[in-house]
Image (tube, rainbow over all chains, first blue to last red; front, side, top):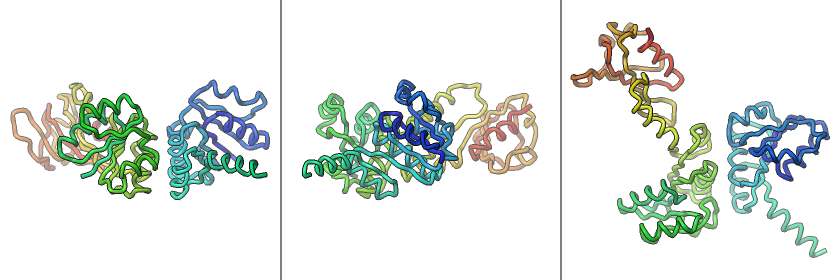
Length: 132
Length: 220
């Protein structure tokens, strides 16, 4: 499966590493080349400097042939914009988008984006651990 | 009208000032306390501090009764999200987004923003008009970029000089509408109009045919 990951932070890099190890064709996009230090030397995918809200960068990253797109930069709005471009302009079959702000997450969830809010998920996990 | 302006930078400041002077009810939403304070001092207390992409801020701002939301920050993605939240959560009838990267114009349209204003393109167009040697100038973009009105100056060496408009190899999808000649009133272009050197021709064209149109009118 061809996967494009936007944002090579801790989450992006780890996801890229895991998918690469499973034999998927992974391309990671980040505006900061220094972020690629998080990828292990064994990483067999592609690391590209570029902005995932820019169509040229997305095409370079192979968005047209991608089976999945994951937006995990630090900016909620950047993730939302890139995910919508992937879904509505390039018809990527599976698009996942991280949105920290739970309210914005609900809104875009309602608009058909598959969204995950780490804020809600993690708070819930902490609460469950506290109760256990 | 009740108009919400997101972003209190230079564009937001002058826009709000103009809207206030036209007696609209205006609220500016700006993150930066310094900019917010300056607007409140100079334009009256119309600026609220907050993030114009957040539903809580927009609820507080009474977005539900707003007639229009205009997002003019210098980050395209923030403008997009502000407008989408306003439209889909608060049913604001009209949303306008400023675009800094001209490439985003088509995307914003596709994602449901009513009107986009590309500041970069506007500046480019204005500078283009001031550069006298440029044979083709953009005057206006219509229908969200599907059509445009351009002006072409016919150089003396052009093969079109002395020929009827009807016999020019103009691309399908562009038409000449007006001929402006020095010292004369502008006249409607007809198939029988004969092109002269120095004519300013106003044409309606699809953007992708611009180059073919220019070649037909200025080519040697």
